[in-house]
Length: 101
Image (cartoon, rainbow, N blue to C red):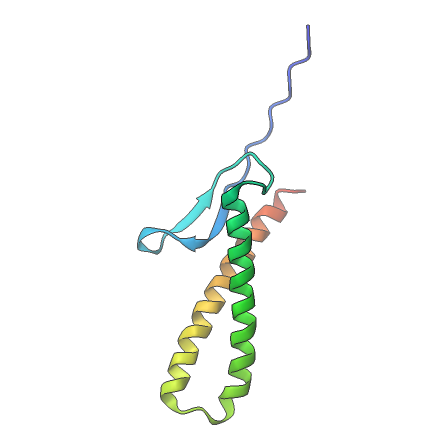
C-alpha cells in the first residue's frame, strides 16, 4: 500500500488590499503560492498603494509649511487614505508571515 499523503494545515485567508461592498474586507482563499491572477493583482495593488503613500508623504512634507486650510484638509484626507491602505497591506503581510513559521 502506498502511504497516505499528510493533510496540509488550512491556509490562512489573504486579506486583499481593497474592500468590498459597504467597505467590508475582502479575503482570498487559495491553495497556490501567490501564483494565481488574484494574488498577482493584489501584489501589484499593494505595490501601487505603498508607492502612492510614499509620494503623498513627500508632497505633504514640501507643502505643509505654507499651506492654506482648504488644501490642508484635502491633504489630510489623502494621507488618511494612504495610511489606511498601508495598514491593510501591513496586516495582510503580517498574517502571511506569521503562518510561515
